[in-house]
Image (tube, rainbow, N blue to C red; front, side, top):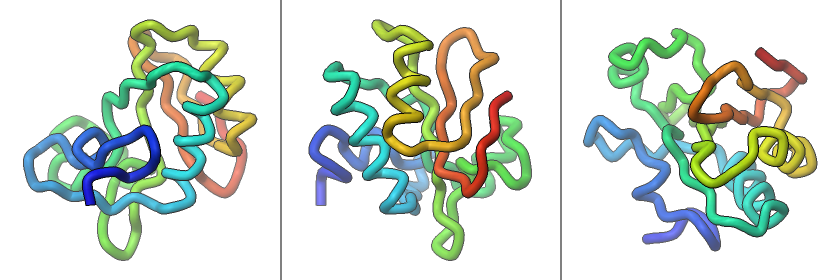
Length: 120
């Protein structure tokens, strides 16, 4: 299967280390598609699923929402600010149903499908 959703290829969402880990929560993918539909613009994903080894390699938190295993799939996406406005991504992310937002980055906005609201 080539597409994870109408607008996103699995190759955009898989772990960047080459292991091809694509354990991502279906609900999170649906929300990512909604975010993109709300923006009505292409969205570049810097990071989505990360195998446990790659998560450590990039300095991810041990309980990162990006960390992806079969039993605990990723719920997170780092969306590039290239061609997009940070406030627009945040607004679309909230409308899409995401609850986790990392906003203190210069080149991307983190969104995730956690169970509670969190912003950092």
